[in-house]
Image (cartoon, rainbow over all chains, first blue to last red; front, side):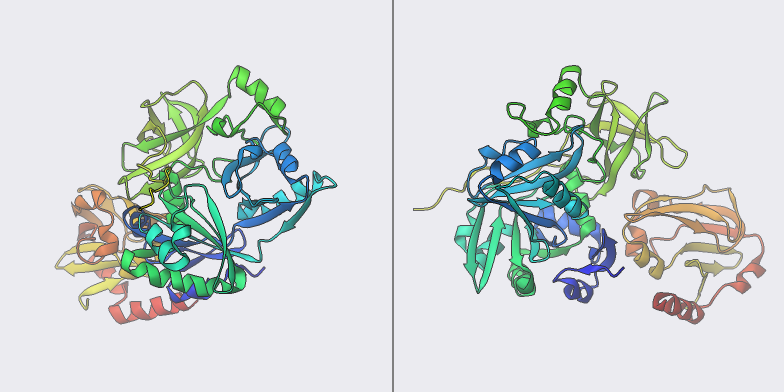
Length: 370
Length: 127
């Protein structure tokens, strides 16, 4: 099957992007070096093509009640112009997908993982009420993510001051140069940044403008490799690694996303799990020896196998191999020494808190002058 | 680079009398991407032509390093273990891996010279 191309495909080729098949999409995993790219985002700034992400719009009178019942976070607490991290759970409280929910006024925009888009759309359809409509906008929306300290100045230059002044997890919709755009102050790197949703056919125009404006701020093109390194450094889970339909929010360390004061699919299981405690939990670890912890490698404690690795990267910002994994609950604590089984050896690692690096997402609105 | 010999598994050899220095080529490192880990044999170990003598890991995957020649390891680039990025930055110089005493200098006759290696790489890159 031919791979799907984002509006920026030709630009990735021109920039010598190392193209890979990412769940059916042709995307660049890196341009020159993913380590250099991931470093630049924490030092200056970087831009990513995230057009593979899915966008589903829920509208109609009942749209809020509909999503409130399908997710575990409280959708009713999102203000207009704000966004929220949320989880779709099945009846066993396993994660169907993690998503960002944007409050558009009388409708909701759900930004979902590329690999789960069709599954989520089907799940919505199965649970649909009479007064709710859903539409898949994924093929109409391009997404460029600008991340890092310089992102505010670039966004100011290209999209205006009103956008650059957004607070964290807030967004704005505006008409500019004949394009209807939606821009939020958000991202998947742990840095200050913006996610820019563009009309598919206008994508290239804005890509070039952002890239040009970013030159003086050290903007670097970043591929999927850097994206994965940065989200791992920030301690963010990734679906297919730390999350799947057998893992619950409590096991994943996402209890802060669960609101038990409302009714939702999966609540019953979570109430029980909260009482007795989850049987496994997500941990972070830093390798104490130079060794690459890769997905599915077993984790040991005192020669006993206690779990497995779900993600591992070399962190260019921490200058160490870091990883995440699942272990039996109550068998390890912070700073405990564990071992990762790497090709027949058992190098040491230390259990660590998230994030692995200092994150710099903007929490406070900038004080306006005058 | 005229004094270098090459293998189809993308190692290079620099022969000096009965000694040979071994590393991987610029093409190999560019295909692997950022190298973040390397494991090398110790001085005194015997290595065999076309057998694995080390392991490398890039951000993409783990790969084996094969010996272009047989012999005894007499020197190891120990600094490389803590600076595997040297293989990317300087594959023919700072990125050298081991030096051996050749067991059979005739083995080197089957290695590729620079132009044959270049031709081989061009073909491989084209496929």
